[in-house]
Amino acid sequence: MPLPSDLPVIDHHCHLHPNGEGVAAARRFAAAGGTHLVLATQNYTGTIPRSIEEYRDQFDTTFQLARAIRSDTGVEVRCVVAPYPIDLVHAAPLIGVGKALDLQRAALDLAGRFVREGEAVALGEVGTPHFPVEEELRTACESALDHAFEVARDADCPAVVHSADLDSAGYRDLAARAARARLAPGRVVKHYARSLVPRPDRAGIVPSFLARRELVNEVLEQEGPWFLETDFLDDPARPGAVLDLATVPRRAVAISERGAEAIERLRIPFVESFRTVYGWSPQVPERRAR
Image 1 (tube, rainbow, N blue to C red):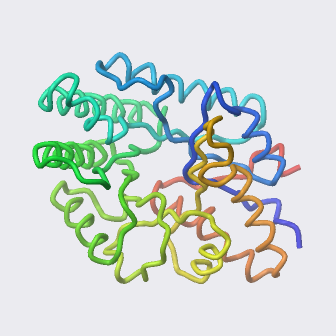
Image 2: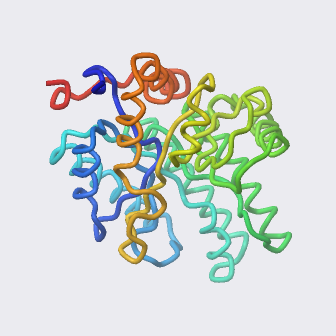
Image 3: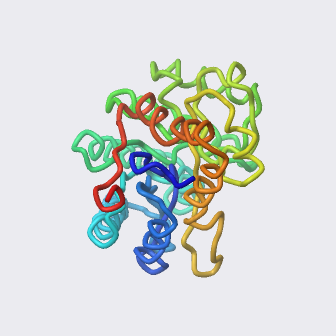
């Protein structure tokens, strides 16, 4: 059974690089049946930003990529921007912990401005290191995450979190941190979720599941909200990492072959969850609808 003409197919989290596949990867995504990409910013230069101007250039590159993809492929692209949280760890030895934290906060404020202006739909990735760091750095990273949640609250947008995979205690801790910032846990998305934690144990946090076949089959019967993503990195040195950009539409096509009931389950990650978390009702672009 083919995918319904009114069903969008959305990769909730990917990265593209102007010196990688870039638009060509988006063409492959569209050819597989994909309609929308949520494009997360990344470091495009290989050097750690030391100024707000470098972050402005980074975010502008993301917006330029999004415009090029829309123009070339007809795929709808929504951008997610924020300073990568690990930048603080790497900037601290160069400019000091205090200045690195100030820069991280300023870049988060800039990202929030872009959300309010409609260039981006969420803050991300934000979070804390998932590897050991000195206590002073850990405290600074946690302070930056608190600020990120405050910016997301004020910009009325989701915050997309980078962290180690979470168990139920981890979800509760993240929800408590959001609550302290007065950000609803339903506006916090745990990206790169690799294991299924039952909905009652997620404390309202929304998972974006990595679209591995076994995990997709496991989560398909779960109530929303939840998303599917590839976390495609578009790194020429690591082709196909983490998952290829065509993975989500390929999973959707395979699921659609199970029949009408399975197709309706796909409306959870591709329609209902976006409406719930982002306040956005995705529509199939005219090019694919025809």
